[in-house]
Length: 448
Image: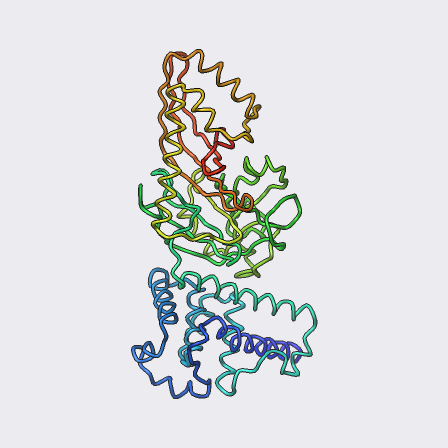
């Protein structure tokens, strides 16, 4: 009996969320049909019903349909499709969508609760949270579980709606080398991970996939071990750990990233073990803020993301909020930074010590060097050169998500081929470049 009361109470809670919160995410201009009208509206054909949607709703519907055509097992798209059907007064169609979803994804708790919500909506108007006496029977732990599901639903909706709003290019992905096929971009504010494909030189990357993700229990940038935050920065996948080598908590596997990176260590940030990984196999998904700092996907989606990841090459850019720019802005910034990198290469190749050192920030650091010792070191090196030939290839450029108010920084990865009269060598190099008084300066230089 107690379990039945709890189930009924959970349904009423989600019922209130669906009726109030889902509608609040749409424009205030649309008219939402009463639920009593839904049984009449069920006679609409699919084409007739689509004519009742406003532009934003129609774009959302088309996006969901495209996702499901590409991947019929996109469970999130099925859930959101049912909510759009419900909000558009097609109750029976919404229930059918959810019934099929819960059969395919029996551990998807949120889908089960929304299904119960819609089944109740056949008989009465949606109630708001707190009106049912059954709610008072919930203990605090169960109420917390329901609140976490409510937050998950809201995060999924808001993340999806970002794509409907016509975002263009993430500023972070300035240029991807021919050796980097995909890049991962994390928007912490939307609990969303975006997968972008490299289309080649001079072309903005193309969005090919996106996922709901779970982040650290505490918000903000990571600074020290144990602060339960997900870091902000430009990182790279360093390895793959299969599920058989991991505790059940990590689900289908893990992709560790190189936190702390060079810049993190310079800022004396601590901690380690920041991974992209799956979910404990007892569950389908987790609440939006529920990790110790890792980025977590469902196991199905972690398996899907594996096709995009190449160890040692795939970048993972994590930011509080993704900065979106137009294709024109993206191209202008790309050209500006590429030109700076080429000027650095030419001044080095010509052994023009003055021009070369002017490319370095007063705050420069490298292994064993600051800006002054670097200048003395390079003066000695240049004195022994009769010629230098320097080529850069496989160039990737990433705008750093957060540095400081008003400060711009770029990470440049490339392969450096060096030839001279007394030394030849190739290496994978990384530069951090910061913009100071309108000019780009090298802040850090070292191996990848």
